[in-house]
Length: 224
Image 1 (tube, helix red, strand yellow):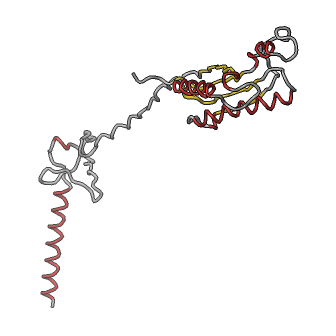
Image 2 (cartoon, rainbow, N blue to C red):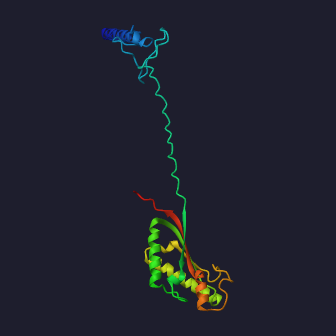
Image 3 (cartoon, helix red, strand yellow):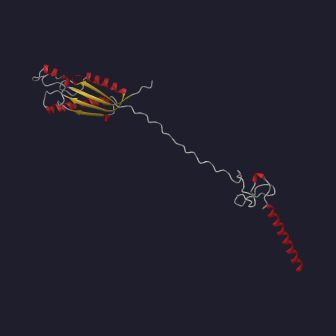
């Protein structure tokens, strides 16, 4: 029993001596100029801790910066500035005024469109192809012959007939605003057509019987 214990103790002492020798060799700084100041193993490779960090040899001067142990920090990202494109200047709205002779559109004292009146509105609808209409304002007027209330009603019926025909030509009804103003806004002066109702007075008052149309929108730019 005593001999066996002595053998075990001797074996343990030898193992400790070998371990200490290995540890001492690993902790010795090698003469590798590339890794000066850091601990290296017998192969000249920089020794690292369990976390992958280089060991600094305390007896050597401060280690030189190396790409392996002291990598340079990545440069900060360069901020990208997105410069917005300059806004495209919107084209100025276009306003067009058209006055249609009510006597060309309707028979005297009537609100039903004549064939010549439909032709006049056809030509007007074709002219709208040059625009992107946002709003079409149509205002009906009559002369002073007849009562004020009658003329107001007649102007409203005539301008509604104009709207219905334009809608039949494919114009969006939501863009057409109509209004009748009767005899309230004559073009002629009272002294120009004085007298009672007669063929002469009716002809003289012709400019007052009209439909004023105002188109608000932008012109269509040709692709050519």
